[in-house]
Length: 359
Image (cartoon, rainbow, N blue to C red; front, side, top):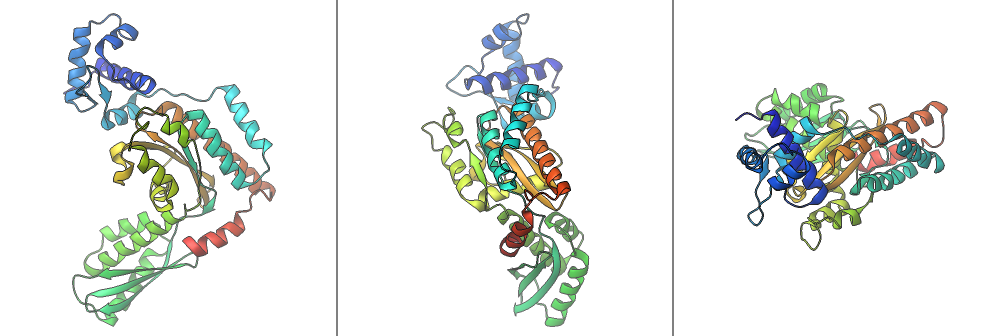
């Protein structure tokens, strides 16, 4: 079924009206506010087609429609209007950052507050931390005929281990051979690079490489144990979460490092602003929410993450624009501190302690 220009326009109306009102959108509302030259019957027919495409749904207690997660995704990728902060708002935000003591942790804390107030949702910001976990050496120790202990030495100097069950038994010489080969093949690779390499291997080599990828992924997620978050009240005031159990997973995510870490680490793999909508979340507990994320920092070595977190009924255009702008402001502040040798950029001691404990 073709998604005609009119249907795209109607989908845009449904998303924007529902985001604004939190009330299912009827054909009468669309005709009255947006499509004054089209009949309600025509709009109802077109909405039925959008529903058949899975882009909107029809709550059984209402005559109106609401966007589905695929509908929000199509909106974000094809229909969303740019909503850059106004010049006055940009000046105000820059002024706020220049007013605080030049310190990367203070900037991160301020960013969470500014972002939350700007978007009226929860905001999560991590302080700068060391770069992605990277493999330096892989070693295997036989525990049983088909069980091995996989040990990974990271470039940070940290050591991570995981028990791995193999399909076939492997002797000491074979385990040493696999460890030596993977040490050479996986050197300096991140979790994503190791996973791609594993796809090209077979047998025990593939299983061990996949285990190394999981170890690096866990190290990346645990790098986000310290986060600043603001705006939970904004989220709890949303109709979806008021007096509802749906708010519980969001609160748990903010309070538990590993859960929010798995979400935030996705920003490392994205270029620019990354949007995760509802059922796209890898964690089932987060599937009532959407997230807008971006990296900030200095090159590929020292980075942090900004995130807007709220219900899927989110003002995506505003959230994307604010995350992008504040990430840019933080990039400039960090770059200026690096260039000037400013003590604001005191990540050197943080890298040492963070790497030793989390990477």
